[in-house]
Length: 192
Image (tube, rainbow, N blue to C red; front, side, top):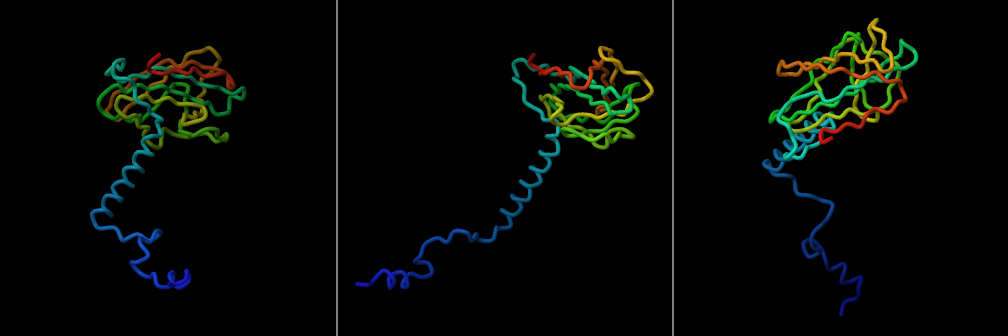
């Protein structure tokens, strides 16, 4: 009878069973599948900027509309303004917000979460995508807009027109409510 040390030394190669930690090189088909999957995930993460959520089909309208808009102003008129939109895309196609303008805006950009006091100079650098049958809900802790004021005075309680241009050429305008920084923004959802 062999001892434990002798038994272990006799086991070699295939007799040891599967080796974990080493994978066979991927086949060409598998490599293509992995490349497509990686591309899809990157595209999804880019277009998921919208933090979109699916709505229940029984209450979804089949239209594209801006449901709500708010501007949070600082006491210092030179400070950037935080802007928040809620956009419902009830259509069967993905849309992109290409341009956002207002008489109160001299420049606009997108930010994620808190930001510094740098002011945007022009328009949007990239489209903001909203998948079909989804809602874009901008939040202070997530993606939202930062605005450089024009010469227009902004006062709490005031309403300011904001026009959104979409990648299909359509434009929609909504009156944005002006609030002081620190005030709670409305938690608006399409179902409400």
